[in-house]
Image (tube, rainbow, N blue to C red; front, side, top):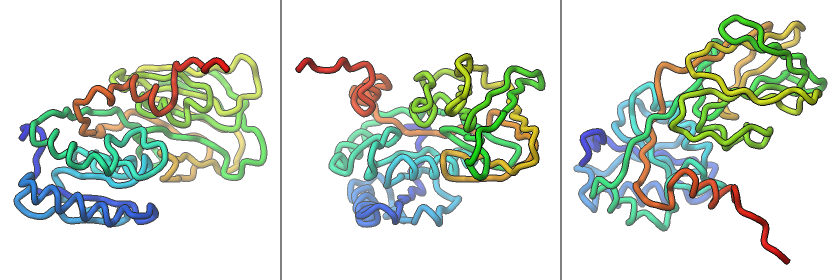
Length: 275
């Protein structure tokens, strides 16, 4: 096996909210043991009870499952691989029907482990895709003041602000009008949500910059990591590059090239058919 992939303690993590995920997790565990990828049958865990001692984590669910799994194991330097049983499955590498194919790829060392830039906030959460700043109760438009390295940059009158990694550029940020960014570029993307001005545009900055979002009013605001982990703050919040990175195991197969996945799953760059 690849020297960067330690299979001494493999765990299979499933999302109980997705029908059939627990059964398929058990199937994956049996297959890894029967194909002699592991010396013992990998343990199976619910996403709400992930252990810390794994050397390789297999995520069974949708993109939300692999995001939560990647956040947890980033601080432990553990690679994560995802089987998609959700909807879009942009981050996941394979369907359940491809289990034998996945095992063959791992047996032949035909994969790579990519490190992905992550975000952290001083409110206490981390994200692989994005941090979203919004008012706790979305009743009115907010004035959100953006500072980079403590220097004022602009004021957005908007419903909120998205700070995205390149990995997250194809998620919420894309829906809000941001650009697609290749995941190997080390940067952050800042996108206002529904800005009430014609001159508000997305901004791409170096990932070493410190981003501060200041709010003048006393209302509570929330900063949400990957649409899952919500923290509350007042006044201002700081977003920086997380000291750890997510490690995603990616199969070396042509159809999983970044731009091919864009075309296949998001229909990006595909001209409409003539009637």
